[in-house]
Length: 265
Image (tube, rainbow, N blue to C red; front, side):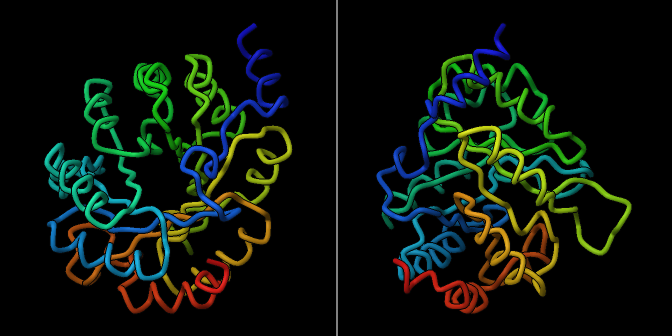
């Protein structure tokens, strides 16, 4: 059965690590950038800080799946091209979300990692398409999915032959609205125990707030995860999406200092 083969493949450590995929030295990585790509100037401001602090990845949303059709939907393919150009200019690896199987080719051309977002975790046509592409893929957990359902979605990608697969815990829905989502620490530990897939944590979407970002980051890094993702914007108060959870550039630098990122670079 496919499931048995997938589980066996995980146990035999056939999946590439983030370090192997991109020739990185650190045991954990960091991905940062704006929720939505708004302009080249915005990306360059963020990229300048990332390069100075040896952060290898820049992220940015080009296709934005929003709850409301009247919310900012992103720049689409133009945003991907913009992110790619800034990445090459600053020597940064790039990651952004793709929503449609028809956009996978563009994603593979412009991005170092194609992201499959929470809302598309069960978009099986898209999962199969990125699986056959063999391009590095970051798969976010659906915000209402179980760990088992999440791993079966990952199996769609792996069964198509793609071993460049990264998981991302971004929080699940809960009755408690103190944070945007509930960060499932036990789910992370379970995935680490049962698979060899690299897993990172999206702190910004898990929490939806900045005031507890640092202690939660320290907690998940202590678990030995493969990296963290967070949102950064030069002027969060005027961002076109997720204003409340994006760090400004000064806050990013303070955060990196607090987790001793530069010291370990």
